[in-house]
Image 1 (cartoon, rainbow, N blue to C red):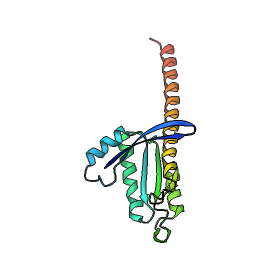
Image 2: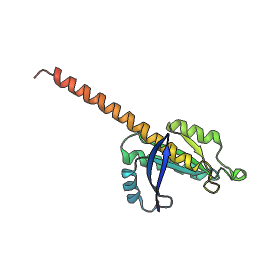
Image 3: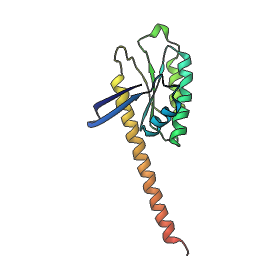
Length: 155
């Protein structure tokens, strides 16, 4: 497990990232739950050269949604190893269909050649900001509705 800090600019605004790479921590399920609970956004990464890794990410997403207790979680689906086109097992159509089902962005990357890596971080920041705005709007509506109901209650 690796931990990184990174400052980036997203849409002309600074963003401070704390990145926790949990790859290979399957044997520490309780620790992963803690990291998920404290996380604000998630890059769910699979290898484009491994159909099995593409299947395995469904379990990871289910765990994220279970721990968070909501479907409104900022997630980006990331297909890594786009540079290894000859070994590719997951088609763009397969990955895009899953991203559409999850209603999240999909990006293909190459960590080896640094293709779209920075874009993934910018995109998850956008997802976090978007979900936070949605959450704040819903809370405001709920508060207003609650106040209105309290005013109209007959007690």
